[in-house]
Image 1: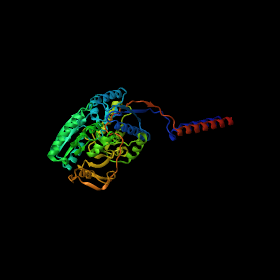
Image 2: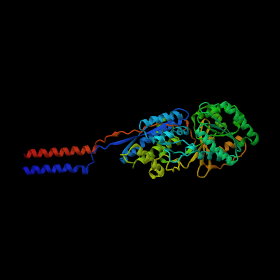
Image 3: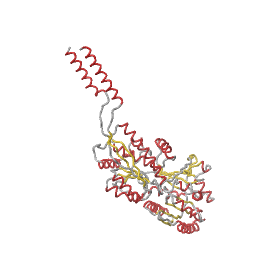
Image 4: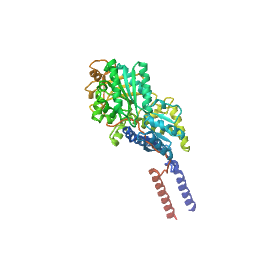
Amino acid sequence: MLRVRIAALLIILAMLAAVPATLPVIKTQAQTTITIGALLPLTGDLSDYGVRAEATLKVAIEDVNAYLEQKGAWFRLDLRVEDTATNPDIAVQKLNTLISAGIKFVVGPMTSAELTKIKDLANQNNVLVISPSSTAIELAIPGDNAFRFCPDDRVQSKVVAKIAQDFGIKAAVMIVRADTWGQGLRKSIASLFDQAGIEYKYYEYNPESPNFAAIAASAAQDVQAYIDKYGADKVAVVLIAFKEAADLFGQAKGYDSLRQVIWFGSDGTAKLSTIANDIEAAAFAQDTLFLNPIFSPAATKNQERIAQKVVQDIGEEPDAYSYAAYDAVWAIALALLDADPNGTPDDWVNHVKAKLEQGITTSEEFAAHSATGAFPLNEAGDRATADYDLWMVYNGEWVLVGKYYGNENRVEWFKVDALGGKTYVDLVQEKFQAAKPTPTTSPTQTSPTGTSPTATSPTTTETETETTTTAGGLGAGTLVAVIIIIIIVAAAAFMLTRKR
């Protein structure tokens, strides 16, 4: 009998030893949390952009972590947002805060002035920065730690120059925000105006204390002189500004010459609620057919789902730069998948940087999960190509009226319901009572009316990159298996006792 009992016990022990081969492995594997810092303008001139970017980044973290869970990845992401107030000096302070917290990956800042101010600090501390909206040409620097998921202003300047040429503009007055972004865009547009034989003068203003009364008075005189020389339909005003544009309009509306001509804006004023919601500013923008280009990423199936979540959170849809911020999180996460879990944060930064330079944003995996699809980066680490949507204010709302196709250097104008079925070209012709412009219209395409109650402009949000560990627990299936084993052991022991 003793041999029988011993044999039975050995069988039970053998069953216990075999369990791990057929049931989920029970282990406590550490999981690393990497915090993404965000430098966003939650307040200040570009607060509308910053608020939308923050809400979109939260969706990105949620989506990426669900993906990482499914993949069984070695890390998860967290988000820490810092408000730069659209102020370069504050952006530096906030980046130092993130660096002190051990954060090595930052989405933002949104303005070129802020990125200019922080880039050396980021390089010195090996912090990888991806701005969704900085466009200054002078920041296109190969090999640094700053990447930009939007095109630089060499593309945007082509949009303004192309439209000016299509409408037969002979002279322009430029009113420019005197910062890195404004001055760079002005120089790029001026270069193209030179090539096209378009005369121009420009005025720069200090964003901190603009003297719009004096600028409006001087600009009005110059515009009148150009009108006398070429006619009102051959003259334009180019405004490179942020939300202070509404204040300038308040001064400009008092001058007939400034109301007679058409105005072109930029991505700094496109879809700004401070213009659309201000009765006088909106009226001036409509009178002057104030046309604003903004980067237009490719539409993807992911955008609708992302937009629904953001609308639920803040009541507004993401803008193009918010989608670019979303994509920055995915690029970082996908690049980290095959990084060494035992490496240092600096190792991870170097790994992600190499992956970006090698083209991870053109990969099928990135295309499947990003908001704007696959896209190449140029040698400076910036988005290489782009199209632009064209927006104007009509009846107090922002309306999408056309599209610029970058690869073709071509503008398509839409027939828009909000404009009574007219195109932007029709409005220009009505303004000057003559069919002067030459742009091609699209009689078959009707663009949806775009309404945006928020301002659109780069903002920075800071986020920490910290590492924490979370111990893995037992899965439900494992617990059930253990309970079954205990029952088997107890039953066997009971039988042995009875035989005894």
